[in-house]
Length: 418
Image (cartoon, rainbow, N blue to C red):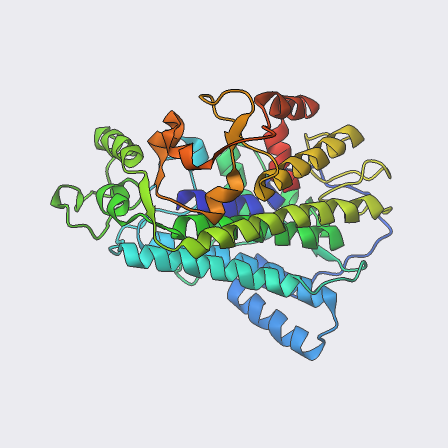
């Protein structure tokens, strides 16, 4: 569950999380504020969705309005997810593991969370992603633009009806990264999202929707009822020994360590909804197609207007600070997409440390022929037995070569590129 939230914030907060100094590039280009901007800045995201819906209904051929609606719907989906997690007292382990820290405040009076309700929350979040992607899908005009200052956007994380200053994206990131940022920095950080970024947003919607499908495909009720207290302060469970976990205790105490061990022990999940695994495969294949489309569109760009994804061949520069990008890295990314596409199609195999040369795991069959997932047996090897085949194995050296092309920063670029 926490992985889904982190992934959603990669999609949303990442747009405001890699700061650059205010730029004077494209000074001659005028960027009137989008219709939804005042509402996003004041934290009234639901109202932004409603406003964009009405405006688009009156001007259905307007791709700029459609772009605004899709992004507003996406933001609203993330906001509703965080509100649901706050309602049920999502615990914060950030004191020990900063990468697990999320901008969701502690709830002094959380409601009990049941397994059924958790599945409903995940399914509802996935539905919001699918809806936003469907809104963005018809956009085809190359002139579409959405200038945004993402750092100024606020979300009402605790669902109290007021998006406070501390719920502003730039403050969240400054606190998370330990940076000394100011309101002026946030006001000066403008991204002019364009046609390529439409495909980028759609690709991320598919990626996170796939994660939702994979989780919902499995029955994790026993795991939730035994170790749900590791993530939430109050869970509906028949196990009295873990039914009253005090939300005020220090994060990651000894009982957390015991629960973490039990968590991995309980990662033995039967398939409850096999069609969701095939749906996840469809989402992942769509993500790869959209990543290709994103960069095909980027390659065609000639302007240099507050770019999120730049075309280094035409001399574009990105608003993203601290990450370099060259033609060789883009060629490497295309090779990576080829590898992922081959894996999802079953044309290439994943390596496993126990398998001899020439044998690997058919990832496609993991989705099309789902079986009970036992994490320990997968690591040991026998869990993968049904999917072992002879064929073209993408060995570890392939991945090392790609990482070298990005000077050890492949993962960071992959998050950025999608």
